[in-house]
Image (tube, rainbow, N blue to C red; front, side, top):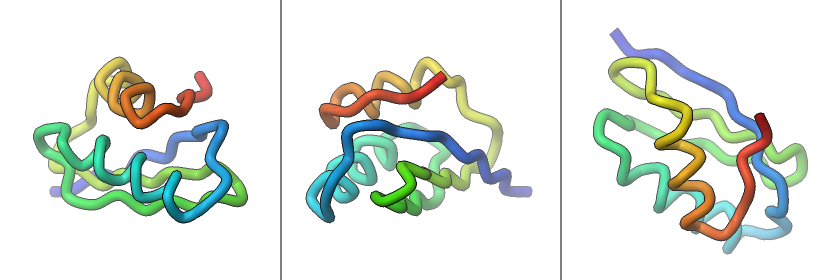
Length: 69
């Protein structure tokens, strides 16, 4: 059964930002899909099981943005 977790990411301003976050978060094992809304900073991540927040934060950081905690 899949679970969806919503995160808030700051610093995104365009489609390229969304693509970068999507690409990095998608690399986390277990991630099934990533949906990014640049305007609100909302990132919905669907995965097979809950993901460790530190892994999501590291992926967002790798993309050049900041996960709000």
